[in-house]
Image (cartoon, rainbow, N blue to C red; front, side, top):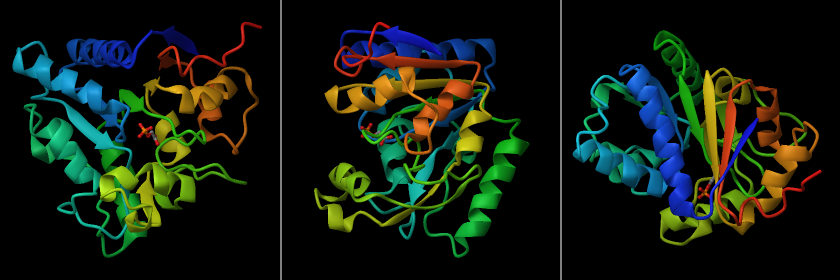
Length: 245
Ligand code: PGA
């Protein structure tokens, strides 16, 4: 696992934007896996700016988002569809037919999860998976627990995760859906390259445990240690508890 330390959140976003630019420069038709949440907002702002300046071209790219809340449609303001439109898709030349998200309002959620796996495979797999991390060590909506799912699946959200997402539901954690659809650990680990961004002190414990801790379903991100091409980009606050041993 490669560790890239930066001082500020802004620098973390800039480093992640460089990785996206590298991947698209190597293959304009690359497939990107995308996260939501607070962490990637700066990254998306930078990507939009690079797109405006003509330094980045999403015209042949394909994207797959990690997850979506269950029970709400793409037009719901709290949906990750809405988040992606607001923060990235409205600002770059990515063809909408190649911007994939799980449908939270699918009539048959299990079939929707299967469809997503099939679509990712049909696109040739994910070249670069970008990730944020929950303070509890989740990636996507793969929450800590006695077991983890390999494939895209229906997931129950932890109360702490619902609180962390209240921002997208008018500040009301109770309004955050209790379930979501999420890529599984296997879906994520099949990506050819993974970049995890972590910023702020609330992530410091999870980050330290990924770097030095054992593999455990109690910290889903610890499974990233099994991947050959993972980079962890942290700001100073998120890296504060990594020991030098
Ligand atoms: P955050 O969420 O970027 O809003 O902290 C990260 C995550 O839960 O994956």
